[in-house]
Every structure is written in C-alpha cells, then in structure tokens.
Image (cartoon, rainbow, N blue to C red):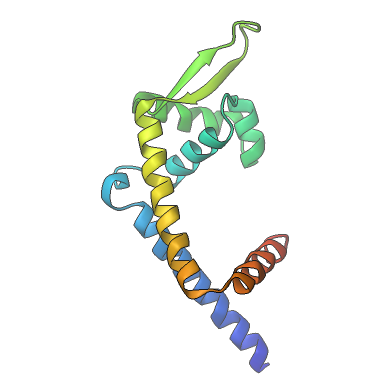
Length: 139
C-alpha cells in the first residue's frame, strides 16, 4: 500500500509540473492564446500542409470542431488555408509569419523547460523518464 501511495504522490507531482509548464506557456508573449490554440499551431507546424480532416483524425475529434478552431486562428492571422492546385476540393493549412513567430516563442518555452530538466537529470535518468512516460501513456 505504501508503494501505491508513493505512486499517487508522484503522479500528483507530475501533474503539478505539467500545470506549471502550461502556465509558463500562457504567460509573456503567448498570454493572448489558449492551450488549445497553441496545440493546433504546434500540430500545423509539425505537419506542414495538413488538411482540416487530417487534423481532426489526429486529434480524434469532429471535423466541425477543428474547423471552428482553425477559423479562429485564420481570423487572428496565425493560420492560412490554401486551396490545392491539383484538387480544388482540398485545402491545406500553413502558418503565417505571425504563426511562425508564435511557434518560435512556444518552442522557446519548451527549450527552457528541457534545459532545466537536463540540469537535474543525468542521461540515464532522462532515458528512464522517457521510457516510463511512453509506457504509462499507453494506458
């Protein structure tokens, strides 16, 4: 039972760490954006030229849900939707210059957090942490 309690406490600490990281993301230059918006921007950055349908499939949500979020990002001048030359029914998503600036700031927060983690964990601990998080995330 003692081990289970330690595990619960460790998970609580990880949750607290995650919230702290999210709070950092939503401060400074990124304070005007929601976590959802930043996540969409990050996904579009990682999947250049992705469609709304593909984005919905990755997220496991309805296409209409993604369309609403993307239209907000378009209205904010962060994302642009471009019609395919080959298939006029297909539109792909790209970040605008403003979107590129946001992702750069977003990634800087990631880098700063990773730097702090690497200062306190040795390479073996980093490998173990990655393995554990990957294993637990499959539950």
